[in-house]
Amino acid sequence: MKEKFNILTSTCVPLPLQNVDTDQIIPARFLKATDKNGFGDNLFRDWRYDKQGNKTSFVLNDPTYADSKVLVAGKNFGSGSSREHAAWAIAGYGFRAIISSFFADIFRNNALNNFVLPVVVSEPFLAELFETIKSNPKAPVKIDLPAQTVTNVTTGNSEKFEINSYKKHCLENGLDDIDFLLSNKDKIEDWEKKHVQA
Image (cartoon, rainbow, N blue to C red; front, side, top):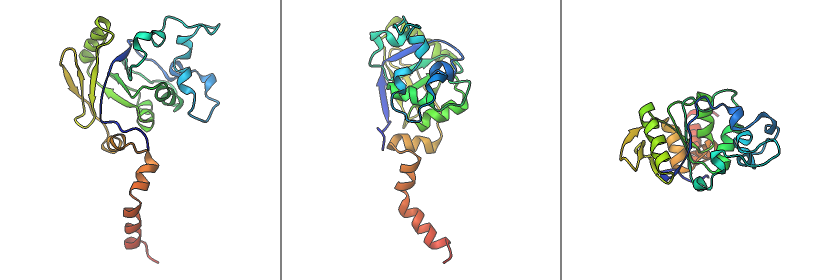
C-alpha cells in the first residue's frame, strides 16, 4: 500500500511554461531502466543541469521550494510520448499533485497510477495561482480530494476538479490496482462460487 491521499496543504513549485512534454520531464536517455528508483534525481534533468553537470537557475534548484509537494504547471503538461517514466520521475522527486489547466490524457492516467494527483483548473485560477506564488513563494494551496476542491489559501478562491471515482478511491486508500483486487478477494471468490460452474 502507498501513502493515502486525502487533504494536502503545501507550498508550490511554479513552472509557468506551456506544452511541457515527457522528454523534458525525463529525457529519453534515462529510459533504459525498468525500476522506478532514482528517476526523481533526473526530473527535468536538462533544465536543472548544464552539459558539465552544474546546477542552473532552474526553479527546482531554488531552495525556497525545497519542501513543496505540489507542482503548478502551464497548459498542456505531459504531452508527447506516452512514457510512464515521466510520472515515475514526478513521483520520485516527491510531488504528490500537479495543478494545470490541461494534461495530456496518457500522462494524466500514468500520474494517477503512480499516486500523483493531476488537478485540472481554469485558466484564470491557474493565472491567479502563479501570481500568488510570485508574490509569496511560501503561499500554500489546499487540495481536498474527498471534496474534489483546490483552494488558493491566500485569496480563499476555490475550484472543483474532476477525477475518476475508482482512481479517487485508490488514492484515498493508498491502493494500486493489485492492492484493490486483493482487498476484494473475498467478494471475487464469492462471485466465482455463485457463477462459475464446476
